[in-house]
Structures are given as C-alpha cells and as structure tokens.
Image 1 (tube, rainbow, N blue to C red):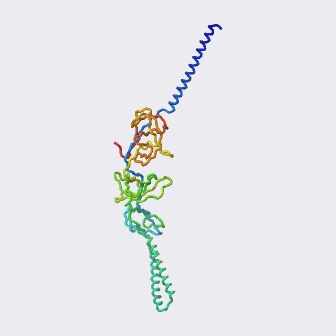
Image 2 (cartoon, rainbow, N blue to C red):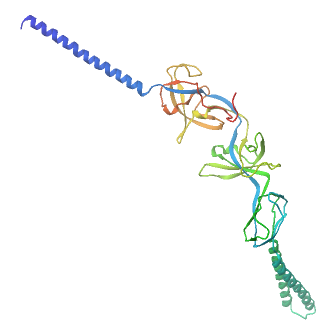
Length: 382
C-alpha cells in the first residue's frame, strides 16, 4: 500500500468518526431537550390565590336555622258522637281557659241522668229505712250492706252519666287563639272529628339543631337571639328550655328548643328563623376563609405556600411551591373558619385553585380575585 492510499484512509476514518460523534451528540442533546420539555409540561406553575392566616378574637357562638311552634297546641275534636246544637266561637278568636266552644245534643243523656238520679234517691231512702230497722233488730246486717252497695252503684251511674253529658261540650283546654272553624250548626259529628285548632302563641317555642362538635357550647338556660325575615330589623330574646338527650344517628345533630315571648302575636308557628347562642369569653383563633379548606372523609387539609424567600405575602415572589397539610377546624363564623391546629398565624395559605395542586407543585400567585372572607356575609363590607 502506498503512502497516499494510507493517508486517504486515515482522513476518511477521521471524517467518519467526526460524523458518528456528531450524530451521537445530537441525539443526546435531543433526548435532553425532550426530557426537559416533558418535565416542564408535566408540572407547570399553577395560578392560585392566597391569603395570610391571621389571628382574630371570636365570641364562641352557635348559629342555626330553626322553626317556630306554639308553646301549646291542640286539634280539638269530639270525644263522642252527636248533633251540633251550639257553636260559641268565631274563626281566629282568642279564648280563655275552659271557654265553651261547641255543644252537641245532650237531651237523651239528660233523660237517662234523671232516671239514674231517681234510682239513687230511692236507694238512699231504702238505706236510711233499713238502718232504722237494724237498730231495733228488725232486719239483718246483710240487708243493710246490700242497700249500701246499691246506693254506691246508682251514684256511680249518676257520675258516669254526668261525664257522658260533659263530653257533649267541647271547651278550650288552655287559653290561646283558635284557627278556622271546621264544623257547622246541625252537623253530625263522629268521635274524633276535628272541630278547630287551638294555639298558645305567647310564649313561642323554636326548635333547631346543632352539630355534635358544638354540643359543649349548649346548655339549658342560656340566652338565645332569634331573627326572622318575617319580622325584619328586629331581634327576639329567648332562653334554651330543653335539649334532646340523644344525637340523631342520621345527621349527627342535636335537637334543641328555646322559648321566647310573643306578646303581640307577630310570630306564627311554622316560620323559619335564625338562632344565635353565645357562651363564654371571647377567644383568639387563627382564621381562614372557608374556601381555603378542603374537607375530605379522612380530614380537612390546606395548601401552605413555601419557598420564594421571606415575606408576609406571596404575590410577586418567584420559586413558590406548596405543601399539603392536615388541619383541625373549629367554629365557623360567616365565611370564616377557626383553625385549632395545623396553621400558624403569618403562614400563607392557598384560597383558590387547590384542585390542581399536589405536594411540591410550583405556583404563581394572582390575588386580584379573592373568595369571600366576611364574618357576617349578610352585612356588606365597605
């Protein structure tokens, strides 16, 4: 092989090596760029809004929806059958205790009463006569005992007949306001037929439920503030009178009853109202908007903003990530929730966009829109 041929082969091998090395380097560069692209698209920064957890002073308060009912109520009906001979009330009338409302025809029973009273009078005369005979030993003691039993029996019949006659009269069992009349004069009533409803509207009761987590704030005798849209701009004061001694297994709620005065009769049974109960001294809690908390069957969680240097806020900082953290929540007030454990004052918490986050997710913060964080959503904030 000549020297020129050898040189040409060396040059060709060098060129081939350069080409192969270039292809390998290009493939490595391409693979690296693809991996970076995949990593960049798999977990891009997510846009969220945040808030700084702060301490607030709260009065421990329970708020619940309830329904009014009369302190005493009854649907008055006939105990016995009979023909209506007298109606002594008007629909919606206020009545006193024992006032006669309806009378049924008592004539047959009164006739039977006269008969039994006559029998009782005769039995009493026979007893007196036989007692006189017994004193002179003209009659046996057994005959006198029989007379006494006969007298007691007839007197019992008289009492029973009077009770039957009393059942022909329907009276008010307590003072209150009547509803709409359900009977007419001359109508025949069967036993149990409804005549009219009677409601005692002063005082009124309101029944409501509270979750089992707030049972410790409820006790008999504590004051209650009641508001209803039926009477706007007015609050009624009452007191808790009874607490159901068991939890509803379906809802895990406790039923509570409060009583309040209603002298003007403006509150009616069936109205809905808001009940607020306050107990104890004000306490300091770390609070968050309710929207910041994700409630799951295994517990409540929030996302804490980490990284990006120091500062009380997160907007405008770079290199931010999030950490999911379990928390223990307490009382709620409007759109706010108290955090008993898991978040410290000053920590930045994600308030919107949690569904697209996981531990370590990078984020960008945009606080131009914030969820409601009002302690009283019914009152517009300035």
